[in-house]
Length: 100
Image: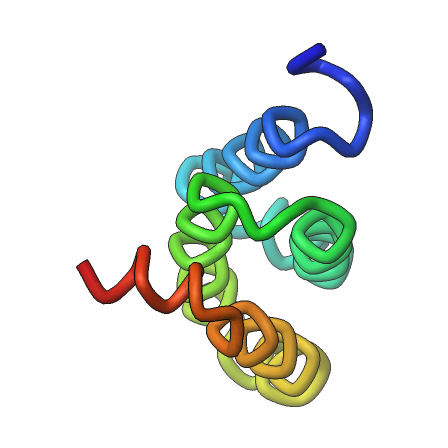
């Protein structure tokens, strides 16, 4: 079922919700919940999949989070984000999808 917890569809949906929060929530909310948003984004994508839609949503979300609080992101979340992106791009199927 597409809505099973941990399915690619539910992971993608969760990342899209976070993306909308990163786009449209007030700056005060984003900063107050910044660490939680970053941790949730990475944990969703880690337990999710290497599905193209999940990777694409993460690739859209991480720069928005980094732009919201660059110093905090760099200090607390950059290393795990880059490590996760590196692991995704080490997968030949992910590279093929994103090279197109």
